[in-house]
Length: 215
Image (tube, rainbow, N blue to C red):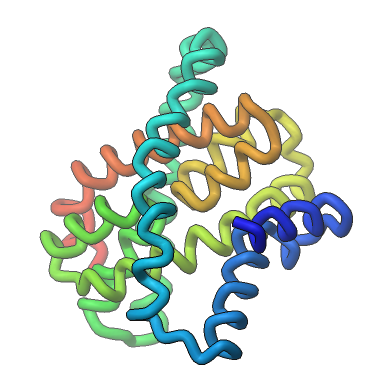
């Protein structure tokens, strides 16, 4: 918690993709564990409280969602269109990239679910022939890169609308990206949280028939 708090302060003082709190605190924790000679088995019990709080924290995303429900309902049609296009794009781009490098079908199936939250990604990967461990890694990497470079890329592309920014980040970077979207603003966080949930549902429905068509 202390490391994350310091990372938040540094992100405010020195705004950059490399000072994104999720990335910076993760790198710092890994460095501390390595320098301290602390194994993963020793570290696991110490983080159980934080893992337990992940559930309530996810549910808490419903609070800004409720407060901004009028905005969400007003833009539900374009939001659904963008969400659908974004979900298909993340799947297709992942599979085509794996094929371009002539990697295995298992790798493609594992990468195809990279943009949804880990529990959903693991279950869907099992259905389409992916490896759960690889899927979890791809999900973490996608979320980390989305949180680091998503807001920056949207700013470069002159996407300033809070609703659009939240929708983009939540669709492609799930929970990790949503944490960064919440830091941007309540509306961005609310939209990102909703997009994360709907993207997971949509991916679960389309992946069993879409993946065989792509690979």
